[in-house]
Length: 423
Length: 154
Ligand SMILES: Cc1ncc(COP(=O)(O)O)c(C=O)c1O
Image (tube, rainbow over all chains, first blue to last red; front, top):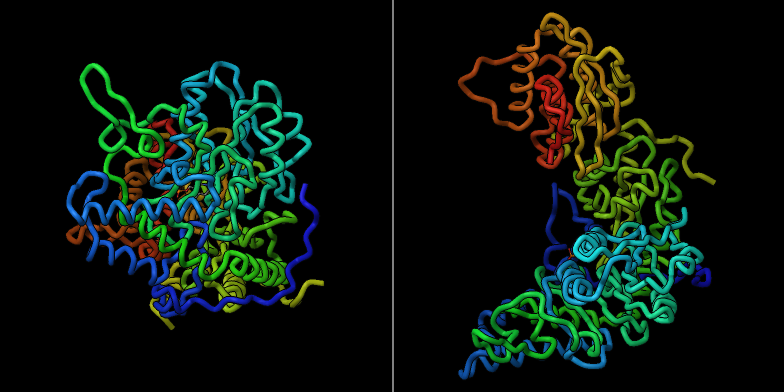
């Protein structure tokens, strides 16, 4: 388990909202306080321009043309793959498969690694705090193979029960599929330690990095996991692009999961041979502009510095946590010791959906609902929460706007305690 | 004040808060002749509507469940509105309320006085919330038509 961490006492350090054109627009006549970054992040001009520049100057299909533009586009696409490799410190660019996002990456592993290997009674270990996209692909593969799901429970604070984890690990455990950061609670899971334990029983490990890569430096070799999945759109990149990291040894032995152009070596009606990874897993024309946008986003965050982004968001998290705890009637859901910038909460007497509507009228964009984590909501006995999730461009002003809007909602609902601050 | 602020105040009126805080007819009905469940998976809203129908007249109507202020108030107002009405009048009311909430009213049709239910029309300005207000009504409709499938508003 992680050592208890002192709340960050440093002030937020970044002031980069000006890099994001959309943040200048007003919503419902108010300054936009965009606090729905867990759903998707806004895009810096550098990313928008990179994608537009690709279409203006470099567009062609890849791996197919003898002409200059095609070779140029292919070089850009390959360079984007190398950028992703360096970003998460994979050993080789061939270990990076471009996908539509996290969901597709996990489905790829489920169908290409899981389906041919798993047999009746094999166990897939995941946790109560998984996003539906790290649950449903495994349920599908369980139906196909007879494998079964085992679930690591979560404490009241929103931490994984590591004793239960130890108890659930066994010789039938074939796969550990675990989220790096919980999208609903903000909990950062000790994925490196869990990977070591899972490897000791011979299991393969997939880490869902959707909520992690934009908020802290990620090193897949240091984690030691076999697969790591993430989405570009939560990392300031366009939608429709993401990546799967897979260790070369595993990818090499996995069959294709979709067939088509670009993934073959030779095709004949009696026998087709497949290209080596990563092409084997990228059937058809990929999202070329998206990959280039993703590389631009990675260049952007690396230019800022992942350590600065992390420090900034931790300072905001501490600020927001205190501010919400100071509002009588507000309860935080997810109070793990090690957290990313996600504040899930409930306001007494106000349903999250009503709260979301009222906050929206104040220009404060949050998410209300189950956050695609229904089993987790059931675990906490709640239909959903309101969630404010942070990004590098947020500042204290966004959280101040959140707090002011919650007060407004409490006034409207007549549930504001007059007693001021809680002691 | 922005348009959005006006719309907000039009939706969140005292009637809504009152029925949210103190929902009317909030109880199961052991003698119910009709009942149905409704569920909006997106928000987790869940309710059961009970009706006691005798001689083609809705003698009793009640509900239990949980949801946001809009869905709770809508269910509460609905139970008050349908009590004592003939089944066919309740079905007509369902259609008219549905049109009112979704902004699909027939301009040619005679104007109905919705009474207290008029307050629910405020959801029209909040497309993602319309389903909160219609859930109870779909469930009512299912109860009357004997469709035992859970009503979904998604
Ligand atoms: C933890 C987690 N996993 C997976 C996903 C799915 O990502 P995507 O919808 O981009 O495939 C999300 C985002 O919604 C997430 O937060």
